[in-house]
Amino acid sequence: MYALLQVVIKEVLQLRHDRKMIPVLIVGPVMQLLALGFAANMDVNQIPLLLLDQDRTRGSRELVERFTASGYFHIVGGVDAASEIEPWLIDGRAQIALVVGEGYGAARAGGRPARVQAIADGSDSNSSGIGLGYAARIVAEAASELQAARLGRMGRVELVPRVLYNPDLKSRWFYVPAVLAMVLMLVTMMLPAMAVVREKEIGTLEQISVTPLRPWQFLVGKLVPFVFIGLIDLWLITWLARSVLGVPLRGSLVSLTLLTLLYLLNTLGLGLLVSTLVSTQQQAMMFTALGLMVPMIYLGGLIFPFENMPLGFQYVSYMTPVHYYAKVLRGVFLKGSGLAVLWPEALALAVMGLLVLTLASLRFRKSLD
Image 1 (cartoon, helix red, strand yellow):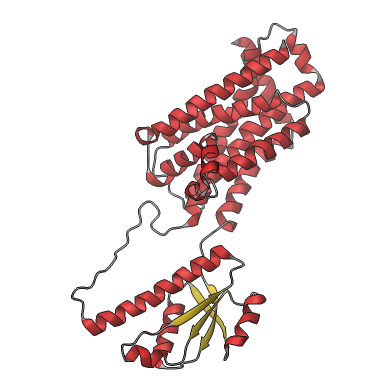
Image 2 (tube, rainbow, N blue to C red; image 1 turned 120 degrees about the horizontal axis):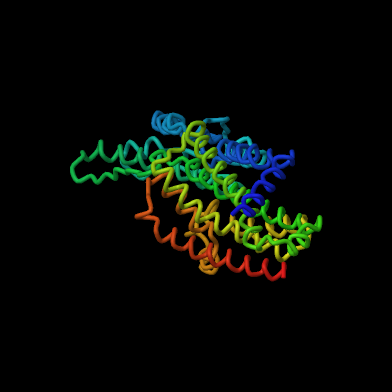
């Protein structure tokens, strides 16, 4: 244990003297959290709306007022003909055009079908799709109220939605926990791989092979500091997510910490495995970033919903630790889940972590021998 402690102290001193490393370990995660929390926001509000009102009646004005009062749209201009709509969409001045055809008010007053048209800029499919959904809901609510006023409320069926865990459907609550997984991948997978490879480059790894220091002591001593740094980043980002971004932590911080340790088994093992496959720090950085981190971020369900992936990619996702840790993060943060609910994810992380760490340790021992 004394030899192990000396390796840990040596690694901590080396990290402390590397002035470029501290910003990466502390400032970097904070900047990622703030950038993703404030800038990467998928919520769509104040959509620029172009108006073509060919009816110009009280009924058409009431419909337009519904759009502006909803808070989802703001009118940026009006045109007199359909041929004038496309230039507004091409140069980005408007994202959706609302066309109220002539005779809308008379049809509505006479109980006949009244139609309006929404023309969207499909180059931004996400925002346009959400905007069209808002428009359809506003028109449907207007039609429902007219029908209720005409026929009375008897026999009317109303849908009363209730959203659990994220009642305001804030996309920030979905994305911010993903920062934890990405930061921990950087701190506990890429940096340990580079740290071990650095020993190869400066020649100290060969010197260690002829010392009484055992391989497991060297490995544990190398990895333990990054475990503590990962936990510090975990607690720091959790505090910032709650206090600055307003993301709730409904579960236990103790449960989150324990489940994160299981996740670290995987990232540390993968980082160590990479160090046995490459010979330079640049190779370790590129292999870890492009070969492991990017695919796991895309396929793990952190950014893109797992259910929307093709079946083949879903099978690949099951083989990544991020897939299970993403469920852990959103379960603990948003649903208040604990080990009683998340035990399948905990078991998967433990088994995968032990397998990867064992394989990496065997390869590392062989390289020392």
